[in-house]
Image (tube, rainbow, N blue to C red; front, top):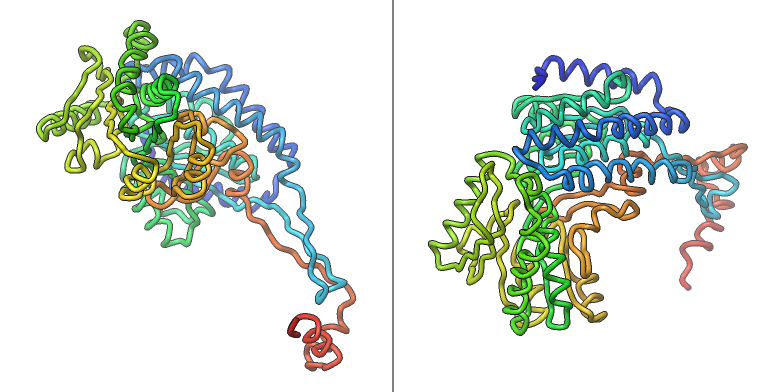
Length: 467
């Protein structure tokens, strides 16, 4: 792994800032060419990325890398390229009758140098997507990669090789990350844990750097009594087992209506046996990223057992940190399984009596990054859509809402702040510069300076009179 030092990092930031100042508004054609070049380089290195991710994780399924890590990058590039000209257009506004004949407009301009701190769990998508979005907005970018994915980092460096005038890649551990967050970026995006997110925000505050924080939390699933139980079980399994649960929006725990509780668990086990276990080989289940995380998950299981939980283990654990599905019932809030974001193939399941019961349970915890509702009731859908505080919401689905390019992605409260992806991402990395243009208004300024009643009386009549 290439280990950058703090002096290199600071010099890199200074150089990028200078380059931005020399070209504060790159032409849209240049931005589009840059996106096309990055897309081409990624497609050329698909197999390298798959192999690198497999080595970094110990084992990582090709599905998890190609479908969930590479494809979202390519789709995002295509979506941004299709809409970039529209998003960049000047927005004309009315100045109001009192300021006629002036004209008002908003120019969409780059912010400057954007810092991106990427995590290890989706080391391709969560690095590339914010980078290409910031580049599309006309910024320069510094990208800090996770020290836990050195093989993937090598390929990402190759993708951006020769593009140093636009984007620079940084690697290193906590000291480098700390120095990175201390730079006076014009915007900083961090993806990772809530605990580290607080430190990132504190460091950014010293420079008044605006931040987008994509954090985590315990993303709940609500399964009501009118849900398609078989479909719900399959969807929850898909969301939980993808990347072995190492997803910030993975279903963390399930709240099931008491009348459907037993049948839901039965369906989970049956779907696992039919559609997952029989097809999982050595290369088809992603490993837990490292020994520390693997031990943490096993400790959570042990803690639950010691406090009275019932633990169903899908199969014997494999080598290479491949953790099988664990369904945990009879849980309570004293257990770590209900206190920590799991980030693994552990699924606690609790009973609820109705929708209000489920929503109360969720509100007793911190605001989740994602929530999932399974029901056929439009009334229940409307209630959760309007009343449940959550970063994102999917109905009768899990995790795929993140892959819809037209939808923004972001957290709320402890699960983060700000949004990116698609149009919202473009505006996150842009400054909407308000501009008022006036010509031949010397007469107005003269009247304002003299407090002329010829101007103030009509204004008072127009805007301050009782109606």
